[in-house]
Image (spheres, rainbow, N blue to C red):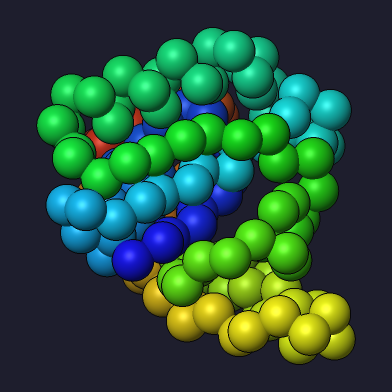
Length: 152
């Protein structure tokens, strides 16, 4: 299976880890995963500070290597909401609950371009100790750590 997933992944938290891990599970040991990583310019629209593309790339690369996945993988710059997903030949798009509407739009645009529809695989958000979802914004505010443990 050829799988695509995208995001800013900063800081890399339990929800991101779940998203990436599920992407590799769906690809299988002989599959292929393409990770779209937001460019510095696109990530600059976030409400919290974001590490550079290079730093985020190193973090994702370390995570993938530490997990020992055997699927082929690559990371490509994501300069907008869609990236190469509009034209690439792949099977599954893995998204969070938050980005599911973007995935639906990707399939609409693919159809308009004469491309095959891809399967959408939605990952539920990982909840923090307080029952609210883990998010980079909450981590940057100092509310929770990357694992969802309450700080204050």
